[in-house]
Amino acid sequence: DGSSNVKVEINSGVIRNTQSDSAINIREGAVVNITGGEIIASGNEAIFINSYGVSPKLNISGGTLTSGDWTIYASQGADVTISGDAVLTTTGHTGSIFMDGSTYYPSTLKIEGGTIEGDYVAVDVEGYSQVTMTGGSITTERSSAMELSENATAEISGGTFTGGGTGKTALSGSKEQVTVTGGTFSSSVDSYIPTGAALTQDDNGTIVPNHAVNAVASVNGIGYN
Image 1 (tube, rainbow, N blue to C red):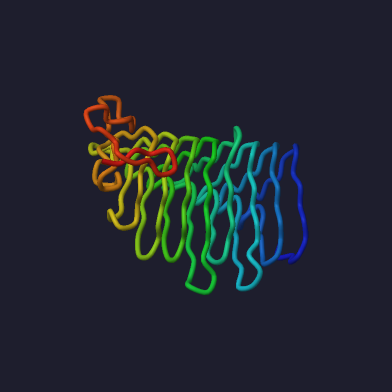
Image 2 (image 1 turned 135 degrees about the vertical axis):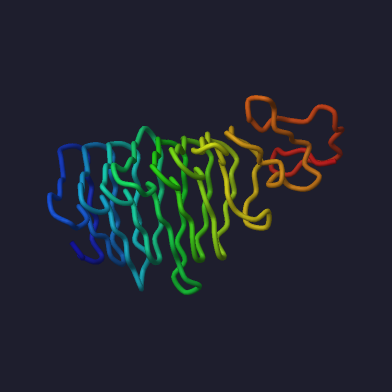
């Protein structure tokens, strides 16, 4: 709780907070790698991150994280990576990941794999936060799978987004904030596909090459007309 400039590795076992606080509290300079085990905080966040100095790093490639509030709450200067078969879920009426950051202490979130489940907005991205997603799945019961506000940005080239409620909204944010070049979505994301890209969304919600368009140039493997 609150230790700085340390490295923590969690490979198995159970870390449980039975009171109204987080199970793990990460501060500046700390590096936390989770490859297995269970992290449980029934009354609050499973992991709370707050830094006003050297960005702490949280890498989750396995294990199960369960919370009564946000599973991961990053308020300032966090560097978070989710991959492998990690499972993040909440038993409360919130989402699974909350990211925030300022101009001086921005936060980054990389989603390369794993399963992220929330009751409300599953991944809430605010402030000067940056998201890159290449794989994994994000699911929510009642709202958008991922929502961006303020000055947050996201680049999505893979993964599955399943929104909740009647709209099944996969992504919520302005077209200036979000770029989509791949993935599968429960709602239309046409407005987030780069202008001129030879891409379209098929009936299954997956971003696929638009063979009706003759691409004249390719950038990072994406054809443009």
